Image (cartoon, rainbow, N blue to C red; front, side, top):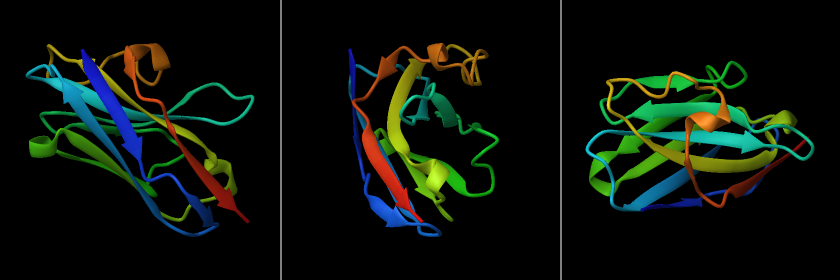
Length: 128
């Protein structure tokens, strides 16, 4: 079983930056994908970015050019560098994990059901 722990959520002003971390522990597969999703009040869970252990990355349209996902394989940790944060980025950010038998991440992404293991989330609040 895999456990995910997010950290780094905070309150920032519009235009600011923030970095989220997600550490995975437990029995990790040889190849896997990890992702960031976010959910604002009253909204559906939205895909932000995902990354494969082999290095491929994908981004949601609303964050392309502003957010960067990266990984530290030695620490089983992924990061989300968020720049030029806007009010609409306010949400709970969730980390997710899914084993991979391919060289790319789940084909059903950006649907949230592409991932089966989730963290508890970390709150990001952007004030204008």
